[in-house]
Length: 221
Image 1: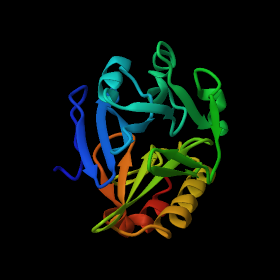
Image 2: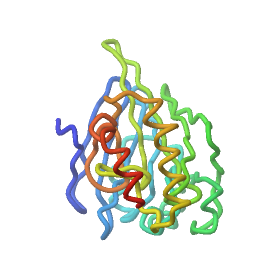
Image 3: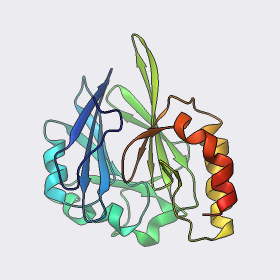
């Protein structure tokens, strides 16, 4: 299994099984957006992370699962392009943070808040609100318990990538906000082995990124 969960633009999805979790990832759209299915392997219930683009390709990735909702990590157009199509016939509920309400194609069916717990079959995901890239940017935390140990997955949207935080428009206030949030709420809380699943590109770990925190803050973007 490729631990990076590498996918090719508009290519097939890849699948990773981590104990009770089935994780699928697919690249969609012209900006190579990552869209994820996070599902309970036993109940076959799941959540879609980011209705980014190419609704038919996303629907194909979801086949065989009952998907309760699509969770939007933030409201930029490339992360919600498939919202209108996926919200209809048969519709998926759309969940997002109210901080990005003005960016969304329509009002969300549920407004998420920091600390919300999202139950999906035997799984539970936690919502972390970490503004900076946008006002309503959120991360999803999935802590997995297996017979042989534990693991943690973070779905970070455009808040954290391999190589640094997401774009803050060279605005020092936004950059400070995203760095403060990442350092205090992500890197201080979770172990180095935590898997990071970003909104574009390959997966990484907090351990691979941690040595660069000071450089990221200093560079100002």
